[in-house]
Image (spheres, rainbow, N blue to C red):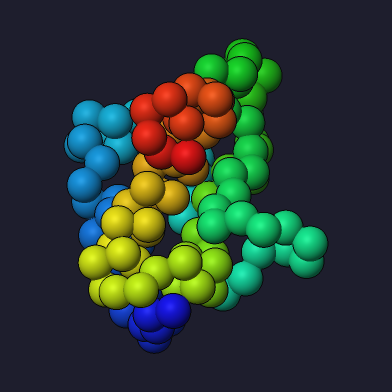
Length: 115
C-alpha cells in the first residue's frame, strides 16, 4: 500500500478533474466532487456517483440538490504500490464517476477501460 495525505489526495483529484476535456466539464451541471476516506459500510468501491444523470433529467428537474461524486481515498491507496499507481487510479475513478453523471453505464465504462 502506498499512502498519501488527505490534502495530497485532494490535489490528485483536482488534477484528475483538470484532465477531463474542458468542453465536457462545461456540460457538467449541478454536481459536486467530494473526497472521503472510506465508502459506506459494506461497500467495496473506490468511487460513487449519486444523483440524476444528465440523460435522465426532464423538464421538471429544477431546484434539486447537487449530484455528488464521492472519491474514496483508502480503497485507492490499498490497491496502489506507488505514487504513479495512485495517480492512475484516481484518474480512472474520477473519469468513471463523471461518466455516470452523463449517463454512461458500468458495462460501457468497463469496455472503455474505466472500470
